[in-house]
Length: 262
Image (tube, rainbow, N blue to C red):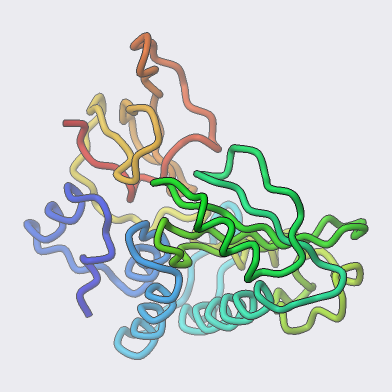
């Protein structure tokens, strides 16, 4: 499979191709999981292709997750969870409501709407160039479970994020929102394994290089290295003042999304 088409960063993609680098199975799965330019369902299909075409391997321990005996097994779990979560998102439930939020998820939410279809139609009719989020929440649920979905301006599903899955991480085992048990710390991190690992993909950046997130929406970033979580290490450059400040973890981009500032 052509794994390089899933690398959003032009500079990283060209660097790997030029140097003849061949990503292994874990690196390929990481690349697909972090692609910003491919839809949720395209990435699901790509992960299935990885299972079919690339050899299985053990999954190494990280600071956030225990080692796993089979990457293929981990990917199959992810595929099952994600497909069931997508089904659950649009399922009409008496105790659930929907809200939409325009842009990248930092604005005001709409008033609650009873059906997914109505919420989706209102959101896509109002969205701007940054797309929109849809939230499915359960009023009265003491565990504050919800499902968050991100769509582009064309209404294509780009990402799906759960909070409060059952103990085994499988949304199909949900008996009712108020009965959802929380994931243990290890189970939650296993489901989000690719959010907490640096699989060692080579990049062309050197200390002091000025880079930007290829998805846009972030301030420029002075590269100083990479973290075990897969995020870059460095300093944010304020666009208005030019001042440097050390970045916080939640605002630090994943290094696979970076390219040179031009």
